Length: 337
Ligand code: F6P
Image (tube, rainbow, N blue to C red; front, top):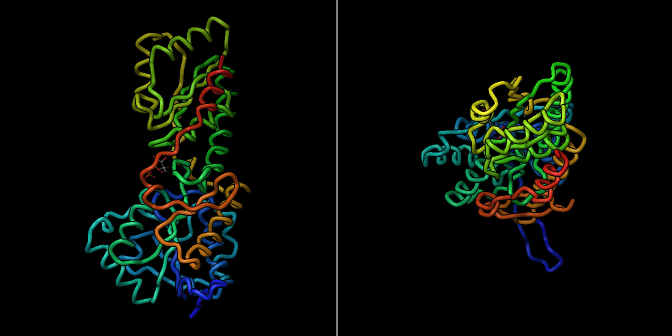
């Protein structure tokens, strides 16, 4: 049994078994985070258990002990070796009771949950009902979580999308064509914004800003007026106009003569070997999550703010919106003129 004692003599938290899982959409760098959680836990004298397929694995007792070797050779791999799921069963009280029973049977006293908003919401209610302390680690390509400047997987996703867009530019230019490229981002435009600025887009359409079809039409006509050979528009899948197909349909009413193609980058953005930045972020956050549990933190998410480890309550992480920086929106507008 491991006791952590403050200089004052106060015992903070008594824990010797911790579980780790990934949940929601996978993100490159999740494996690097699992590795950091496992190795930090072992370093601190804890036993650590991997839970497969997120909350589903707790319900169906897919839990196994991990050692340092279990996480060898995974830091460079995309996806998640623990697999992931969005669990419908965990939304029910019976499902959560079953999950708790299986954790208790193994003596697991605390959890590290790597995922997004839905993962945090599940962990929060689980603590409220059954008192299992959990630290959340932000793992989603969308970068839309309050309490951290960056989420694990975002950097890899934008670089993957950028590479695709550079290739699209070659063919767009050769055919004097317009391209409308849809990137991921169900509720937020973080991916679209960075990819659009980095890819030199004419316009970036994101859920946070109302899309005005007439404005896009104006940009297209201006481009033609300036003999632009190709034009690139980036559309976040969750754009308020309804995604790339709906956007193009609206625009075509005014410029039916345009020569265009649509590309939906889709799940390509979720895969691949994580960038160095994502691996380091994931490693730092994974270590911090274990330290936080040992410090007695509960129901909080770890994040990186101004390059420092910070914590935010699940309540805030779930309910507060991380707004897109206004200066980026302005920059995109200036650079596309
Ligand atoms: O949350 C990450 C994300 O990639 C979103 O950008 C996207 O809308 C969603 O997951 C897709 O989910 P699924 O893989 O279940 O289709």
